[in-house]
Image 1 (cartoon, one colour):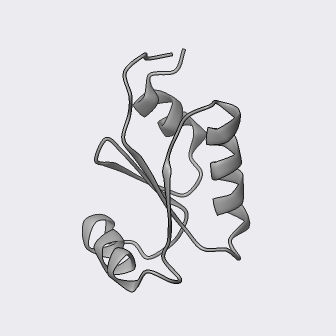
Image 2: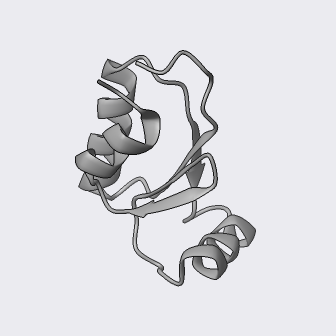
Image 3: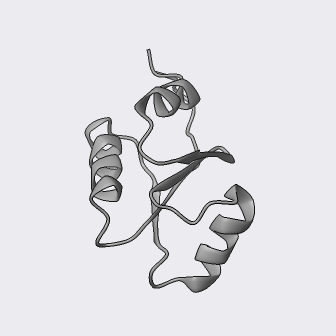
Length: 82
């Protein structure tokens, strides 16, 4: 695994099952991330949509690159996990 610290933000809602799955996946890899509940943080929700042109969750921003949905292949690639 890449040893450098990645900046990861997960945009989620409490009722989203895929959000829970992606957060659990990152936790099992022991990868720290910031969780932003867009159902409570409307400014973050607007920023999420502005950057991705998508309002669906989960969204991950890994070092500024956007992943919409739980896409393990992209997560692995962006985090440089072997």
